[in-house]
Image (cartoon, rainbow, N blue to C red):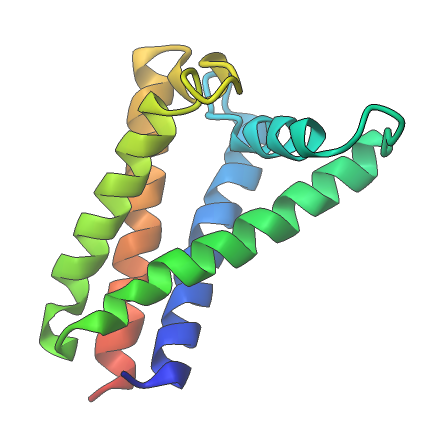
Length: 143
C-alpha cells in the first residue's frame, strides 16, 4: 500500500463530502445535517461540566469528520488502482447507508440524516460522491 496515495485519496474524499455538506446545509431546506450528528457525538463524550461554545463544537465536529472520513476513504488504496472507482463507490454507499440507518440506534437522533426521502438520498449521494472522489484520486495518483 502506498501511504501517500492512501492519505491523499482519503483527504480528497473527505474534503469533497464536507464541502457538499457544509454548502448544502446553508442553502438547501432538506439538506442532511451531519454536523449535528458530530456535535451530538462529541457532546456525549464530554463530561457534563464541560460545555464548549457552539462555534467550538462545530469546529471540533468538522475536524473530527474530516479526519475520520479521510481515514475511511483512504481504504480505497487496499486494492489495485484500476479498482479505485469501484472501491470508492462501495465505501461511499456503505458510509451513506450507515449515516442514514445508524444515528438513531446510536442515540444521536434520526432527523439530521433521515428526516425526509430527499435528506436520505442526499446523505447517501454525498457519501458516494466522497468515495468516488477518493477512488478517482487513488487511480490518478497510481498511474
